[in-house]
Picture 1 (cartoon, rainbow, N blue to C red):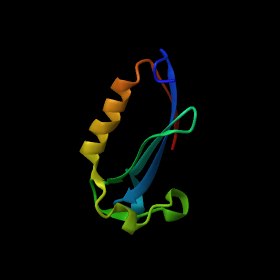
Picture 2 (picture 1 turned 90 degrees about the vertical axis):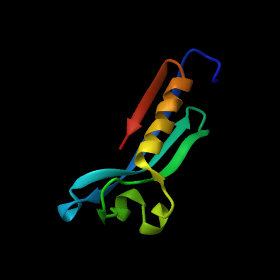
Picture 3 (picture 1 turned 135 degrees about the horizontal axis):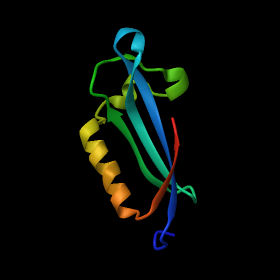
Picture 4 (picture 1 turned 90 degrees about the horizontal axis):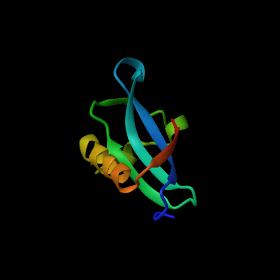
Length: 95
């Protein structure tokens, strides 16, 4: 209930690798769902460095998913706006 004083959301971030052997983790997808399972946010995000390992076996991300993906800074602004919209946000995180 978005009218209540507390909202419980879950966030999942899928990471890809950059740099030597893909050791630098970069955000490639951000998904946020409500307690009831409603999708609040789900976007592929273009990492800020060249990808050297898609980590597909864990992330499910493939090169084709990132064609036309949103720039990282734009996604960050959108997610921050979600935080402002949901006062007293409790966030359960998973990476």
